[in-house]
Image (tube, rainbow, N blue to C red; front, side, top):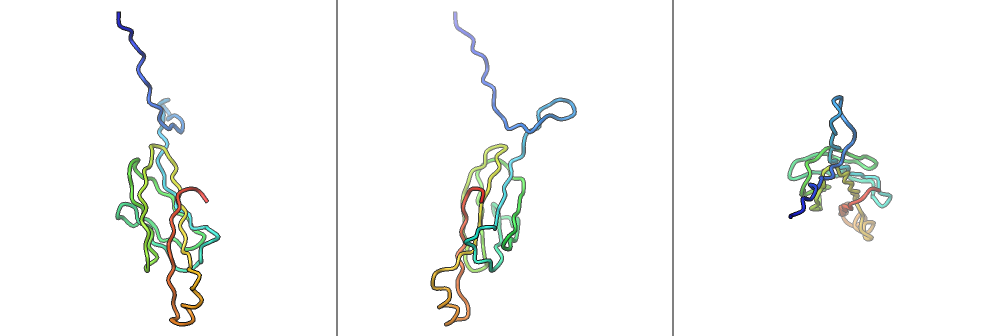
Length: 128
């Protein structure tokens, strides 16, 4: 006689229950921090997710938005250079990225000679 196994229950991120007692799913969020001490604290960084602009960050700012679970492409652009990172977001996950404008070691020389120098953009996954 075959044995009947109990169905496997899905574990979903629940943040509580509604007025009727049904579970409420926790939203998937993306938070971008521009608070790194390594940041040059110069120039804005334009952030886009999947080709859609979501924020313009100055040093010390952060931006949080709800996103759909699944694969995404996050792009940071300081109007000179850009950095794109692909990532996956699980249902109910809080995804954190730290972005920064970084100056190369030769920045002072370039500022002296040309009056302008490049800034490199970095994107690191994880809370600051």
